[in-house]
Amino acid sequence: MLLSGIDGVFKNLSPEKFNFGPFDGGIPDGKVFKNKIKLLPDNFSEALDCLEKDFEYLYYNNVFDDALIRQWLKIKRAEIDEISRIPHPKEFELYFNF
Image (cartoon, rainbow, N blue to C red; front, top):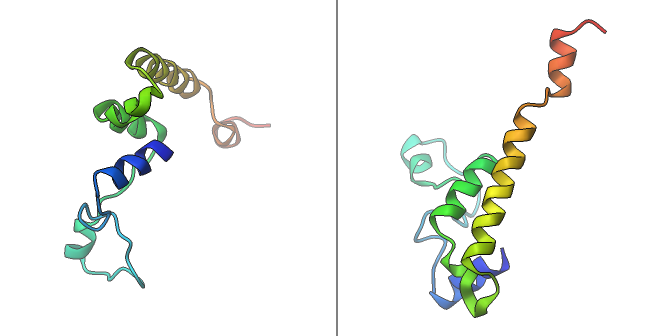
């Protein structure tokens, strides 16, 4: 996260320009305004998808290399796959009589 912030500073990126805010006060109920706001990923898998599309900022000052990033993505996707096969406690509550 720190490297992405540094990347934004070096590139002089503004969150407002990309519709990430900040938004002072409440967000109006109008759909037009809400549709302009970019949302962050809803889950870890979506976050990994975003990272896979754009991770060149992690190369800054040779902090990470391509092999490490790709291996990390592979490991995290395997973790997501493994966890998705484990029943959630709520599933036990809903579907099994204990």
